[in-house]
Length: 281
Image (cartoon, rainbow, N blue to C red; front, side, top):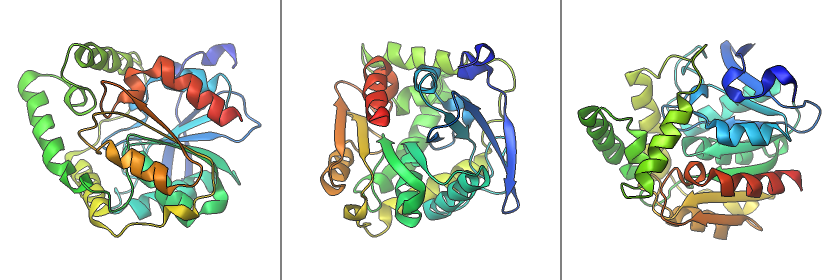
């Protein structure tokens, strides 16, 4: 990496316009290989990526993060389906001129990644699916109640809802949650605007629709796939990670103990070497 791009926290945003939408994105790491495109979670923008995951991966790969249509500095309105979000992601990737990318999808981003690989298989070389579940996954449809409950808990206690949604409320989870939230605050300049309430609600409905939709045939996914989660995910039940692992041929599964939806962030020191080995193969 060049010296002026030592951390994701300093990377400036760029834009690319395609299909009438201007997408805001950030990139870092050495260009030349297959880029790793990161797909963010519900209500997330580019500021929501943990630098402890982005930085070490960008030390070895060309990393691209972006904000979905209608989120952060990207224009347009938030799509009401995961499939439309996947089409947007494909449009964005092709607008940057890439024939093939690796996808790193977390939560909602992992759903977008699954839809994208099924709709545009030639565009994807490898898949990392973290804290996510398949279309029709049992329990995903309950996400609205869980999320609104924790958003309310967060506002009443003046804490970030992610502390409740992503981490266990115990002696290991609470400090991990605070450490993660503090890492996200390390960027002080050029931060994106938080998602608007209406856009957040549209994304939530899209996830609920995904949970209620028919199962997709994940057996057609031939791309190498790494699946990761904590063992106690309240947002997207952890059992769905095992379900995807069974259904995606040759996939690999990593489940971290005593952790929730944000297991890869709580155990970033253990997860990053696994992700790097997988991406570097």
